[in-house]
Image (cartoon, rainbow, N blue to C red):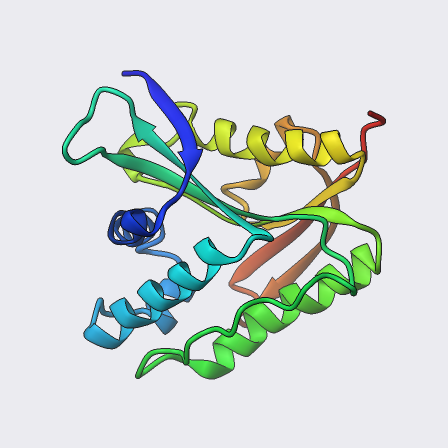
Length: 204
């Protein structure tokens, strides 16, 4: 099977949602925030994705099966944000969290990631990999690699660093692409390890 990468469009939103739930169905955030694919969960994802795909500073990219047609099958997606600094344009407003979401866990996980992001990067411009998801059956087959390389190439073109927060499962992939471990934090009463990783700037 051959795969190809392209920028996401609004028409891809239902498929990106499917990839997320396939890739992250057992992730603590999914279980505690999006436990059921209810109408409010689908609405949250559709509105959030639409706002980010329209945002010129956020870059959703997808991996597709190049042999698939009508419909084209999306196998993976990544979200990169470019040249993040304190003077970057504000992010688009995000929809309210869906009914039943564990808001204390949202604050613990996302709040910690946001604080560590700021502490580590301060105001240095960088590209930020916010999310990467690959369908289970296509993991370790090159899709994640292409998504990481897309963003690191953008960082290299600009001569800036790249940053991300990784799970234990994802950290080895990022290490292969030059990301170095900066700090780890235990979350969810010690049940989840979050690794903060930085890729040094490459001189143009």
